[in-house]
Image (tube, rainbow, N blue to C red):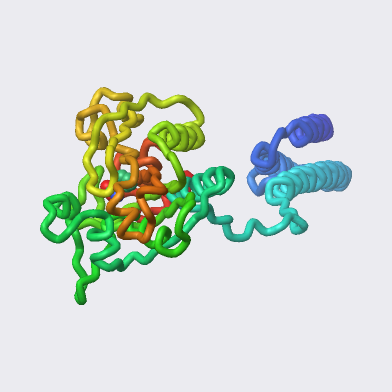
Length: 340
Ligand code: PHE
């Protein structure tokens, strides 16, 4: 009687333990069969009630069943533990031979990038890249450019005056004069650099910004030469045709003077804060060098003439990359700069 019960219990236990599909199902099976209040423990209690002569035989059977079931349990438990360990090792695998990532390489500021591209272009066209001081004499910044102290054109550029009659240069044009003084004609040069004006700062105005001056002095230089170089410049930077317009301008150091505007690439011409709602952005003021400027710089205007332009480098960067606020360029914010 008990023997049949024991052999049924044994086969139920085997199938429960063998069919457990994960560690927690196995634990449930263990509690049910091998636990302190489980099936085997109950069978042990029944066994205690048997007469002595049957007890010994049934006891052996019970022990054998218990050993079998415990060994199955131990084997299955080890299987699940190994599987769990394998999964963890696969997930946490670490390749110690990989090179360390190290610090990220930096990149050049967008202004520097465009400046270098233009330096490459103009040197390939035979222009020298020259430099001048940021703290300039009044003579180079104004007088030699045909803007005497009494001239109303001085008010066009809100100037930071420095003690001793010096100024923070308001444009890169004084480098024209310095280059002509130093090298004489013929001359082809560009002068990129930082300039300063006492401006109210907003989306399109900064007190500190960048220009790129260009100048060519030779015999019989014409407006056609000037347009050729300016168009090459725009094509090089934008890689496509941009809509431009040329209109008369006024600068005392060139005659005739022009303003070359490009259609605003931020808004496509419909009007935005960068183009002051006009759809156009002043980018390339230019003209033929005024005879007085040649004379002031020691060059004979009867023999030589030339053109000059003053590219707004900061504006050019804004147009090329679609930057809608000039303050991003000086902010030093890496979320902005990392994009270039
Ligand atoms: N220097 C002028 C400015 O800053 C620009 C300019 C340069 C105009 C050369 C004509 C020729 O506004």
